[in-house]
Image (cartoon, rainbow, N blue to C red; front, side, top):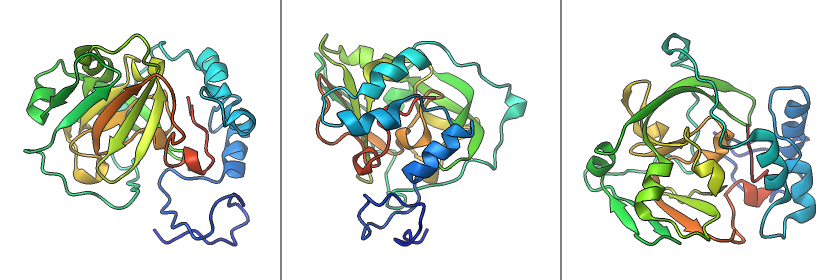
Length: 252
């Protein structure tokens, strides 16, 4: 996509006008709140609260939204005949990175007692889970998709997390980065997915491994994940779009 026009009245005036925004799960905050007010998105109090407490180690919207969204409560799923195969739009951060699935490794480290490095075959040997859920993009569109893979909570359990771990960072092959609260990461429907609609993921959709979950907006669902890091505190960098002013918790 072409860079956003800095004269666009919908753009957040705090964004750097020289940034090349490619549209990846992006909507200006004023439009984001408009969509929420219209009932298209559910965001709780987070977007308003973060501007006040952005310097705190624990965003205020995490406290509000974890109460509202109950991140351990399963989300109702859809039947297979509800899948919308043509509605999942391909968005990218810097284009699709070239990853050799034969040499790919996923690292889980940080505040864990047993750091791990897994190949795709290692991941496929773990218990397989699939789900048919709605993927919701902050741009205002949604798609019902079947995802298949391994529960993130199973990977974290193998790595034996420290009792102090409260946050999970995700690093992608294209340089994209994200962070989640630990409760959302351990939700039973948060997957590291390697299948879409019953088939192996295609590279443009995040292969070989991506996040999939019905409890977060699309910009939280990193593609091409190569490293998962557990932390006791949030760093200054919390997510690519969040560091440009977007909501951190982004719960549904």
